[in-house]
Amino acid sequence: MFKINGNLRTATIDGVNNVVTGVDWICTATTNLATAQIQGSVEFEYNPESPFVEYENLSEDIVVGWVTSKLGEDAVSFYEQKAQTAANEYSEESPEKETILYVTCFYQEPVSEQTPPWQAVE
Image 1 (cartoon, rainbow, N blue to C red):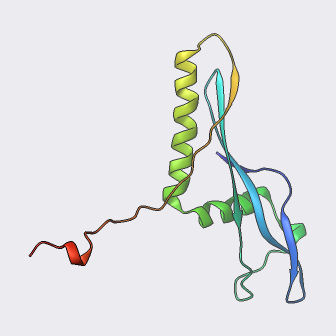
Image 2 (image 1 turned 180 degrees about the vertical axis):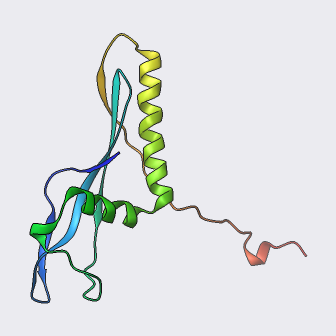
């Protein structure tokens, strides 16, 4: 589950006040004994042609939607799975203690690797 962690970073851009330019997020997964958390940060670019939500009308759900949209479906799934796996593994290894785990991991877009043209087999 994604939530916003802390304050929103804002700026005045092209005369528009309180444009959200960045946010810290946290992805949490919980079992009966463990809570695993992954923290990250996302920066946004202001687009005057996109619908603008006034700062006072923002909700956490709206901003989380921006975060997950910016991260993309694959990254969101990656972070949710990593958090859930960490919580599950801790619960299996230490079934007598409750704890909060802070997980460090980074999502990287898949890249394809190709043989350099000068090494291609003919």
